[in-house]
Length: 396
Length: 140
Ligand SMILES: [Zn+2]
Image (cartoon, rainbow over all chains, first blue to last red):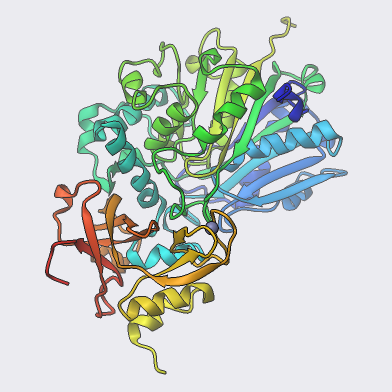
């Protein structure tokens, strides 16, 4: 095959330029639209871009728990939207939507695109307890298999069986990520967590304890995607999209929770897209300075580290226990505390943390000297990922 | 033909799934087997997920091995909250199809990967519709 970068013309030519995020709470007391508008306006302001220059809005929702891009464009007074799109996806979406925004920009369909996720995920419609319609749920609910912690616990159990691991491997993820969260003022769970406290946490869907599960939240998050050239004239260092992939495999399933057909529950989409992702960036796993890995549940970090080649088979938990993913480690992972600790904005905030880090704006959590970051979206059979790189500019 | 209470509870959610649940109420697991490549699957897809060939209906022997499982401690609705803790397993049927269903008759703490199980079909509509038990166990 010729240079695979040629297949994605936006790579190296598009960038993330700004982030907007509301507070994450357990009861916002506000409409989803107002949350979405705050985050989107915030992302444009953060980038230093006038809202009148925004001509695209992209979003995703799950079981109609959000508002449309059209409604947000209207509320923001966008003068001439040219690319508005809403997709019905969950955590697979954030990196994928950044790719779609970049493709729209590269092709000329839009110039500056906001990608957002907004929901009252705790006080309103909770994904953990919402019964989805459709054919696959008809083969889960009669058995009492009703919620994501249960679906993904199946993956986690088989992964631990095949890798010779234990529940303490899951605990290692939760404990390590909390070392970051204590310094994240946005995080809903900030108290330090020891492995002893982990073991004492109540079982929810064995092998998952409460602290293996993300914290449902109300809130919104948005990022601004633009051309690399435009980003270079905006407020912060451009975060260039150097690599990108979305994918799944044969037998992907009928919905995001369906694993009846997927052959191997110890390997998720990350193992499928890894080669394309790294080739697209012209990089190897060892070349990235940090990773922001979608973690609705602790096990998905282990699967993603393996799937992307950041760890060998069954070795991710050992790397984490040795401290390599914590502050000061050689591969910081989920530096906002992850979805486990910061809160569940379905991985849009995972992308946001990557942007903050690549722009040197993550406060005391900023990883000094970090220039590259891999970001994933999704935990199951399909998902997406980006490789991002900081473009340092001369100090103004 | 009149339908049982159990059948009424399980059918009607999706027309493609009704045949499967009607068979369960009759004490059988219905599979689809590809007439081209022989792949078997539980979901009532219109074509084979391996090769897009046409499927035919076959009945499973109802035996298989436990691939993985979850022990549910926190239920998200009242009816299920009365049943915790309970085990939902992913069973690889001998025909090659995976199905999710309850697993009983083994202490959850004593469950092991790949243990042999067989399907039973409780008639009581207050019980789960498919319950896998250890293959050698006599009880239904
Ligand atoms: Zn076939």
